[in-house]
Length: 92
Image (cartoon, rainbow, N blue to C red; front, side, top):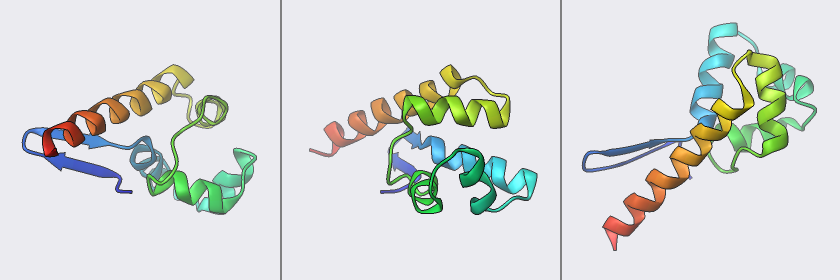
């Protein structure tokens, strides 16, 4: 799975790409964030790589860490899913 899917004028960004930006801006590693999110580093890396969707529970934990609302994080996941589905339909 990719963090970014591009097809013609459509681009879909996985919320993991935004979370990766937060990691880089704060200069922290995945182990630190995984502890804060109460998850394994392996699970966090799957999210960051776009291999796993952002769950409601994780969105709330990410919101606590970033100060960005859980609803915003869930909207990013929803928008990604919608764009990905639209891109997949156009490819068929």
